Image (cartoon, rainbow, N blue to C red; front, top):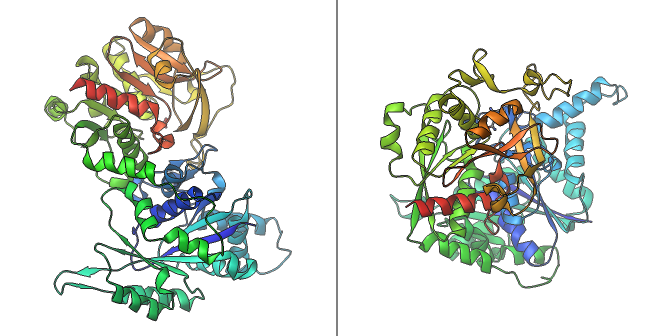
Length: 538
Ligand code: GLN
């Protein structure tokens, strides 16, 4: 049976529970164990699919089509284990499952209650769909003490009791602040947070203390004493310069060894930190850099394009250089300013997006990249905008648009049923926004002798999608005559998946999100190639 590691947070949010869980997963894997990572989110949305990136950061998409918390992206990037639908649950999902069952009368007349019905459903989820893993690491979103997270904390308490305490480990991550004015490190918030956790029945086995500077031994002793945790299990995590240092830092702090000791397990092989050391070295020490513009609606929030930022960094790693991201708010981008704002960038990227706001600035920026032969990558919405730009300026279809934001005009981008009359199944309706998109991994067939084929070195690729609208395939010939090739199609040849410009050093649009599959130890070829093109541009 799998052993379960539960990771809770205290004092404040955003301490890096996801990254800590992901780093621990890597270390345990590296020591020869099979690991799975899961996230339990206390909010009421059924999934983050309908949440604004301003609120919650990026929505991460799994191969099997789940819209999930961005922490699953960290998990995949650090552990290499492909996340699944069953790896992220929310209070909203739990309640909707329970209420559906209640409406069907499946509780046989009983009063349906948080305990045991909600907690039972949470416990089912924690155990569900596991496959001979040695460890399942479950991160609980939010912080201990939040009203919303109570049922989850109660459920994991019960769960550890059900499977036996020796099979369950509680890690609590807290903040140990440094007060500049008094030049002191404070352990009190940690003590309080652990007290809170204990009041709901959980005694942490390991405390990870996040701090901006090293925590002196006597302070760690204090935490050990007041929180009733062995000093060896009071682990500090001092701010790292790059996230790739996190596994190295936890290894140095012996987090993985303490976890194995708890379960009375031995390391099957020595942990290998060399790949992380190598990329940390590149990330921190490379002097050369390229500037890449990201023109999007959510650029002000750091986490809104998390996987994308990461994938670009990975592209830099594989080219041995740093990628400076120049974030440009598409809503504020005036057409007259484009030249000035883009004059120092070697590559332009338009990420995924929704709705009309900011589209005209994006379209103009694409025109600028096309004409000035600046490497361009359009992702999902970015590809759709590139299609509109080309249609307007090269095919002279002045009213070219997408039905997503314009009900008139010539809708070259639209819902499939808007342009297909053959009775193919309609993918979504306008009634319910949750779960009506083309989501998850789909195949694409790449054209012989195309740039994209050269980049992927394969005829068949699988990439993750998250969109409702598609480029109307019936325009293919018109575009191709003018030099914009549809170089990747769905296997039935009905959906354009990739476009590229013939007479341009590097101009590619993809209907999918390649960023979700890039990993620091295995950068995505599309990003490596894009950054290489940008490098050659300088
Ligand atoms: N809004 C566009 C669509 O739904 C693009 C979505 C995206 O970029 N992820 O098709």
